[in-house]
Image (tube, rainbow, N blue to C red; front, side, top):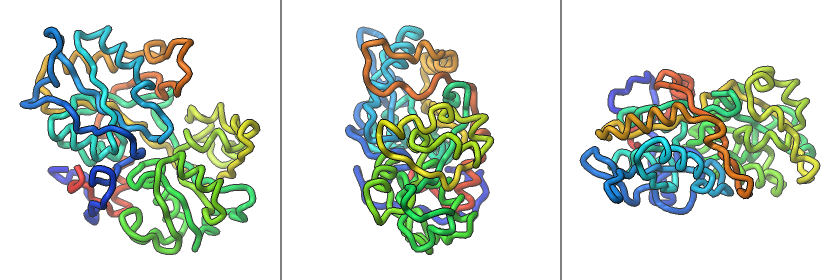
Length: 345
């Protein structure tokens, strides 16, 4: 951030080696490069037969999602509402997404709530994505039924598999939950945890590693990854907010029988603002306003695939107006963890 508006005594998050030489801010590593193509001088990416083009930078939260296919209804909707050609680009990380926006190599982005804070000076929030009426989602900490772990305090000295190093629901919020439960988080996520060990990846990998490895005692993931394997009554016992708000509540436990895998719930977070859609602040073209208006007016039917589609459906069903103030909860999480991200964005 350029003006340090979110008050905090944060430590600077040190860059670590990774795909493309950067750390993922959220989600996971994926194919492609968010820095390919793009525009310059604050204009659109380019034009085809006098139709302006806009690069839509995408970053999946889970490794097993073909995100460009998942987003196809959104692209088709925007092209039907606005005279524009959408050029999708799959980024390796949310840091790569921010770098693409900062370097005028992307106009629209699917981005993490944490990246909103890191990129406040270069992004305009179009709106918050909603899923089945909910503009908030949840983080969970789960274990396996045979782990012997009954509470968060039992995780002292154990190995926890977490989401990406800067995933809001996979790592950052769970770290505050662990800290509030009395565990010493040390310098996690950019250093060693205090009285437990941590490994990091995407949500799917974290969940699967816990199931497959005897040394992993818990996983921290978004509820979208864990809830299908957690009996519904466990959410009812632990979090009325989850029951009332979460779009994952109805399908909780649905995969237990078919997969042969059950997870037990150790913690559910407070509601987290869902990820926004954003545009590049210095993008100076009339099509920007037209696209922003179209995104805010998109409906569930517009985002649905045809009957012949057998991939992952688009996870959100609409977009509601939003602003930086909606993400104050994320800024508070970063403050609690003492993290500063301006060197990464």
